[in-house]
Amino acid sequence: MSTSVSTSRTPNTGRQRAGRITALSTTAALGLAVTTMAAPAWAHDSLISSTPGAGAVLEQSPEEVTLEFSGGGLTTGESIANVIEVSDADGENWAGEIEIEGATMSTELSEELPGGDYTVAYRVVYSDGHAEESSFEFEVADAPAEPTPEPSTATETEPESEPTAPEDDDAADPTTADSDQADEPVAGDAAAETQQNPGLPVWAVVVGGIVVAGLLAAIVLAVLRGRKSPRA
Image (cartoon, rainbow, N blue to C red; front, side, top):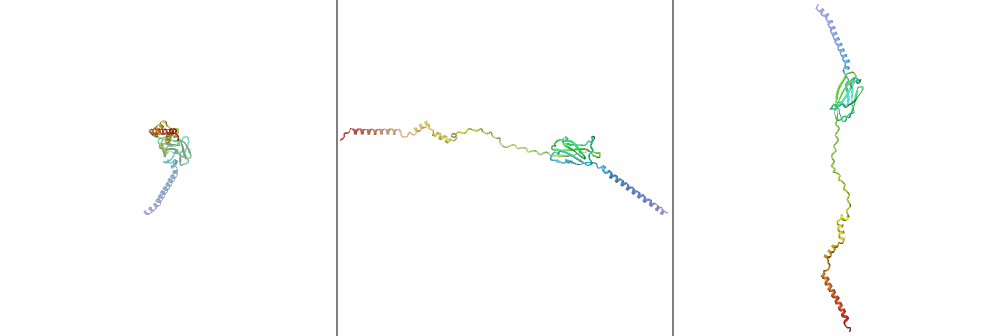
């Protein structure tokens, strides 16, 4: 009697287990399908590249700032605010007019950026309707300092001397001047030379005169005597 009761309950137990397994499998399959379908909705658009890039150090100022986003394009309209600001360390905004083309947004800079750190802040509305605000930074390197010219070591130019009149050759050559002066007769010098070089002494001249006079007198007497003597 007990054996027949046990045999009649076994088929019911197997059916219940099979029903539970089927229900669990169905629930898992539905959950996976819902998750797969909802995944694209959770992946929002985002910034995929920028020029200049985040953290870039530029040798010179860029001409514009360009942001490129994922997705089919940004949402635009009168009530939609898509903004780019390029601010320096003092908070001054250097961004100009904003242009949007599809999923790309750009702005030309109003002026050339001086050396320093800059922050690009943006707000965009994606094609799926949600908005995002974010920022990144880049740097413009300082321009190399120009070398300071060294002070000139050259001395000041001396003023040109005025041309002088040519000097007399005789005055420039002392030898010629002396010789010319030596050739010119000077009365005083000649008298002095005469006194210094008198020639024969005076007494010699007197004695010579006396001798000559005596000889002449002797000759005259001899002639006279010859005339007075008688001829034989």
